[in-house]
Amino acid sequence: MVVLLKPALNPEMIRGTQDGSVDFDYMPLKLSDIDRNAVEEAVMLRDQYFKGSKIYSISVVTWGPASKRDKDVKMAVQEGLAKGVDEAYIVEDDSIVPGDPVTTASAIVAVIRKFGLKPDLILAGEATIDGFSGQVAGRVAVKLGLPYVSFARKVELKGNSIVAERDVEDYVEVVEAPLPAVVSVTREINAPRPPTLVQIRMASRKPQHMVKLSDLEGVVTPKRRLAAARVLAVKRKQMIIEGKTPEETADKLLDALASEGVIKA
Image (cartoon, rainbow, N blue to C red; front, side, top):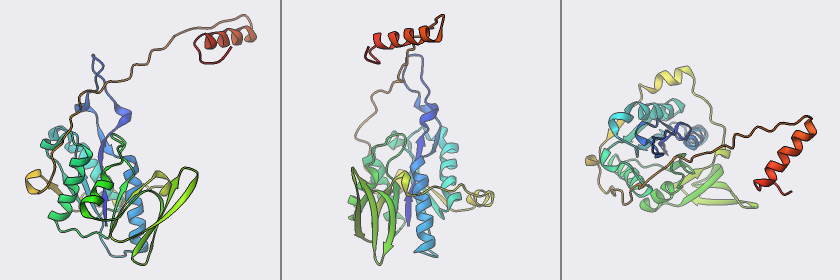
């Protein structure tokens, strides 16, 4: 199996500059939240259906510069290794930074072909916490000519096929696809277990392959650029509402909310 892991920008650590723009260079990276669900599902499926097989992770670093990201990238990748991944491939090259879904998908496919990986199943989170485009897994499937199941909340194997449940508006959809296949999973599919201390220690001993763009063929360079990003400014009224009684204070609060259009008078 292959699981796609993204060292993503941590949205809880957004840093703004004096002019209000976002300082991406110093925002820390972490393993994208929903990718933890993908790793957990890969481990569970291996234990149930693919005993003895290996789980490979592929990570494409889309935020640079690489010299400032090495520590964060290694921590994100090693978290996947500690959770059950056996071997990791990391594409890190400033020439594809900042990346986009097209570039990321083409790099993942190039790694799969370069190193002769032949996965029965490719798992990914439904989207990453920094871009949330939800495109990469689908683009990988198209490039490899494989069936694609998105937003799976439950997955099981049935012979040489995979059966998945998906939430679709007001009903649950059950789909079946032949293996090999690509599946993106939601947060609801499982509850990721934290790695044990032994697993964390063993993670650093597992194979990790750093891959440059010059090692790969067919990687599409980014076609778009990030023109601007700004921190949303939140202005507070800083009003103090006082009254002689709780009732009077409540009435003044309601009047203030009504004047702002928050509630109807």
